[in-house]
Length: 418
Image (tube, rainbow, N blue to C red):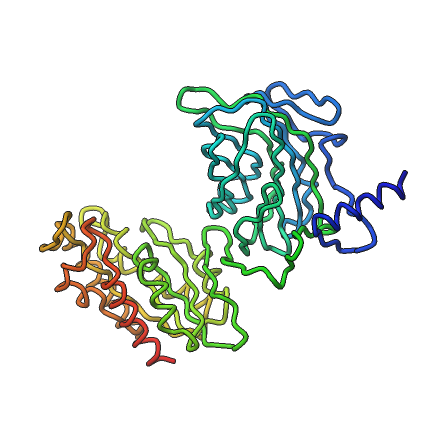
């Protein structure tokens, strides 16, 4: 029996394209729904012939010891939906405690396909749809290979990421689904199988390997940095940090520096002044040996009015950013990008917005710190304040032409520093 099982496992592995740590031995699951004990249960959980019928109010937990290495494990699930309701919510896997661990959630699902959101360390990152119908068996694989997280549905891969799953002592819950607005939960689905594997199994589809993966992001607790496309030629490295404005100019900026620098992007902002996420900033800045870091906190600071936030508190946020970036990337030259104007709503835009005085205040205070710290500066405010015709009309964003102007201004400064 043992030889036969191993032979079947090898055939199955060949069909699935799975890589093993030991190629001649099929991996043994560290936890198997068919036989392994639960860490905990809620509601009514009854295991019949290795399967569990879920009623929407029940859930069970896989013990944490089934994932001894959070950087390398695989969870395989097979689910049959006996009835579908739409809209509904389903939490497939949940190891989150505060903002650590991971979760896989279908936020809205049904016959037409729905987004499956993967959350790691409090960051929702992968949204790819699955399609289900009554009595269909849906197969899900959550694979973590040396830190690279991937989700597969019915043998189809989703986006690939490098995300550092924060070690977590919590069990992994299955079926811990939130109440809908009408106080009901999705019900009537069966978990046909669920197995958890350790580092002995590295899951890849045929044709996939660690070398073929284009890892789009690397992240940790509270941060997520987009990586450049891999190149064979070593280039200087630039990290640009900012909110949605940085998303707008990012691809243009990267294109302008093609073959001159590898551009990394961290979309983020500091919204409060009472505590600063120092650890996240230092970790994000240490992703690569950066030569330049361009940073800006953006229009998310518009609530920093004088009655709520003092001048010194604003200056301290800027100082904290500089300190953290310098510690995480001690060789990098820092470039402060002044915040773009707040504009009036509607099109065409002919006036600055009523909150623009706050932008001027923040830019003025930030400039004081930038000069004290001898930081380079690019004045995006002056660049756009007389080009309101390029504003998007939503008070915050800009047209493609404006983003091109930003990209060119930042490219010029970075080329000077390189």
